[in-house]
Amino acid sequence: MIQTLLVANRGEIACRIFRTCADLGIRTVAVFSDADEHALHTRLADTAVRLPGAAPADTYLRGDLIVRAALTAGADAVHPGYGFLSEHPGFARDVLAAGLTWIGPSPEAIEAMASKTRAKRLMGLEPLGEVTQGDLPVLVKAAAGGGGRGMRVVRRLDELPAALEGARAEAASAFGDGEVFVEPYIERGRHIEVQILADTHGTVWPLGTRDCSLQRRHQKVVEEAPAPGLPDRLANELRALAVRAARSVSYVGAGTVEFLVADGRAHFLEMNTRLQVEHPVTEAVFGLDLVAEQIRIAEGRALEKDPPRPRGHAIEARLYAEDPARDWAPQTGTLHRIAVPPGVRLDTGYTDGDTIGVHYDPMLAKAVAHAPTRAEAIRRLAGALEAAVLHGPVTNRDLLVRSLRHEEFTGGRMDTGFYDRHLPALTAPAPDPHAPLAAALADAHGRSRFGGWRNLPARPQSKRYEVAGQEVEVRYRHTRQGPAADGVRVVRVDAGTVVLEVDGVRRTFEVARYGDQVYVDGTRLTALPRFPDPAAQLAPGSLLAPMPGTVVRVAEGLAEGAAVAAGQPLIWLEAMKMQHQISAPAAGVLAALHAEPGQQVEPGLLLAVVRPE
Image 1: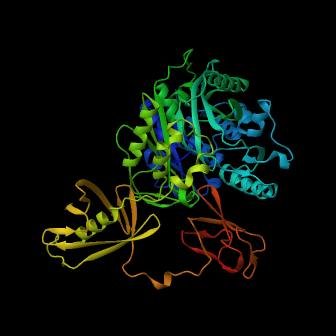
Image 2 (image 1 turned 135 degrees about the horizontal axis):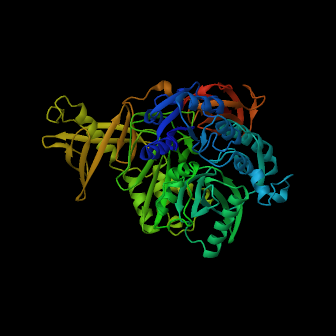
Image 3 (image 1 turned 120 degrees about the vertical axis):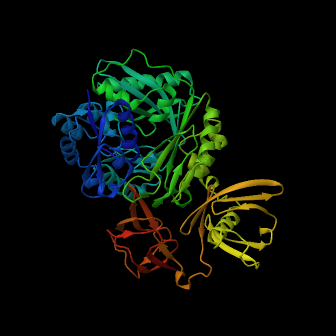
């Protein structure tokens, strides 16, 4: 029996595994980088071991350090979580060679399936060799890892070399393996997968299907179980193929077989030899704890002959610290508060007051709703996300709510091109028009010396905010009866709550302030200074860092005075395991270049200036 388990991972998945270990009476060991010294997973574990450094290559991708940490802390088992070393056969071998129990499939099974190229050959498929015009569009894809990293869609042959180079660099940074391959890109397919669970006694459970079609940058955003609208014939075929893949490598533990479904046909993608981010929807539908089952299987326990019966429908949405309206740019800063209403499962690696840094994935949490029907699960999850308290960096919360309520999603007609078609509409600003007034009134009340209004002057007051990229000025007055504004009856005000009545409809606004950031229910505002700083004006053509990160590359030969074309890639930034390209906004001359490889940048830092022709 396992007594002490080390999780070779961080963040949300480490916290989720620790929760199950606590239920089973297993002691836990965390590993943490310098950037994660105060992270939630570090604080939750019974014991924590430092991995010196911050970059994944120096910490969570160092199998030798992790095995040493397990032995030093007295662990007798290692769980890899997902990502990092979870699909590295060499790491699994090192764990076993150290006399530790490995929570996962055999190194041989990982080796057979962890490389997508080898997995395809095992299933009788071959990647593309030399790409021709007739093969387009194609997908450049990392052979190792997952999570959408190291992937590029190529629609023109002249884009292929840059896509290969970018995918290799991103894959090497995220997984420690820069191997990539090319395969046909299927437009408007559905991403369907089958969860499997297998023991050491020959039993393999296919635990239903999941639909993971809503993706950005080939990374899943919304997942659900079971996959809606699949014909029984196709669902049975997918389950049979998944079992065949598992048996072909004598698989043990939890794994996932992924497919693209188009025109009623299933196209094998890969087998993930680990737990998936979206495993909670399967847990909800089948009433299982997949982590507990992984541990029991590693201890030699046999599964029942047949899996439990599925019940109801479950949907998961991933909350990311990113701005979907700005090319999904990752966001950093202090997460002041995170909470969702009761009745929805929240798996997270953060808690109030934690810092979101630049080194790791921008996922904040996963929210999961389970209900008797799909429609009820959608309503429950959308309502909970809408009511969630998220005070901190910009997130994709509004996008998730709108996605869940979109007619294509509610009708079960979504595919992997969903965001390509609908992103502008889903990210159009729609702030609450009365949020600035509520923010201004709460702020004035909070700054009043006596906590009321009677000692404030009666002259008109104004306050400026930035809301959804737009500057808004709000005006109000102080009267003997209290504050007043045109067209609005102010019912009650204090520093944290404002009650307004408009056309006879009364609403309560919850207000929270952290420095110049103000949150009014789900609306995020930035308080602006009364008099703008003239020094803040920038020259036309200024290119600013859209996010925090590291300059990993500057275009070859780029120097001040060089001519540049509109859309020409100039600078590459890396943040949260993803590379982002900054291009010339117009044809012109490079008037200034302040970026250099290895430079750490913050949002808004001037990187270059292109003087338009």
